[in-house]
Image 1 (tube, one colour):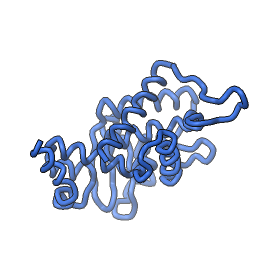
Image 2 (spheres, rainbow, N blue to C red):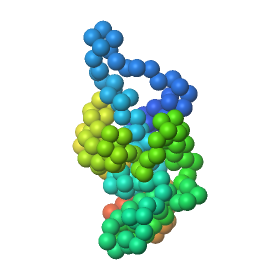
Image 3 (tube, one colour):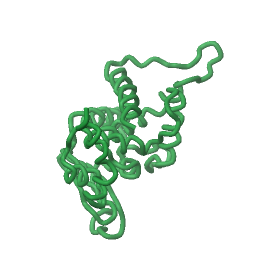
Length: 213
């Protein structure tokens, strides 16, 4: 899964750089004006940032789909009854409540990279959005199933191992942290596992392999 993680990371990083440098060109087949290969990808630019945030935080797909720019009135006082995720007031962290547990993820430079591009798009469109990944037609977040299906389409277009899913990126993120000797307790808290014992049982074999090299 780490190899797959790195392959996706390399591709998404390349797409981010292209957009930052204004190098995006239409991939439409000009002969018959039909979209082929990755042409559809340009119509779903939000997916780049969706994947990039997962690659750099290990967040669950549902947490990213429902990620808000700010905590909403419907989130206040709702602890114990629902889940939510939002940027902190100073946008230095992502605050998550899931399965009756709170956790806070610091916003790294990598994540800030996507946030800056999303802010710019929001400003250019002069629209007020609640969610980072909001469908402009419905004003609701892009669903996890939409993200998963598009990711499956991307994996196929890149001719990568089809057994991997969007959730594999979360596994890849955790696997990398563990294999590099990260603190199991801190990793468990960051990714929102139910316990550090669960993290250790599922991923500790990666460290054992690393220790043997």
